[in-house]
Length: 104
Image (cartoon, rainbow, N blue to C red; front, side):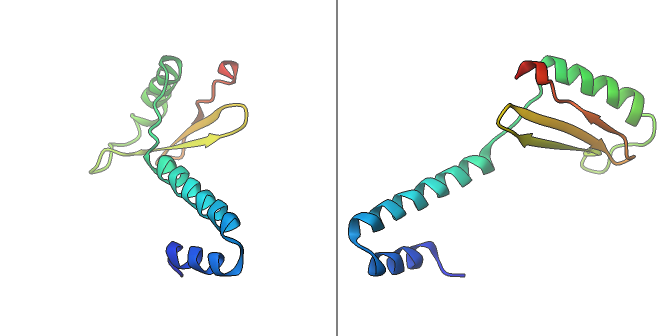
């Protein structure tokens, strides 16, 4: 796969400089957005945390011990145009929807 700088150079050679600058700016914006996505941290609000704690206590904790790194639950966070869809799934197979659509 070609490096980004190499692709920018090819684009500059094929089109006028003003347009190439716009493309370069778009690529920079895309790189910044990807970096922001990698660094985003999500947290549960009080209502969601209470829902999660209750579910985990009654559905998961009694079935197994947490693994060596203490992570027996996988969270899924899906951004939509309305808000976040949040779910959790335990290694025992139990799942919970933590989406609070009334917050949208």
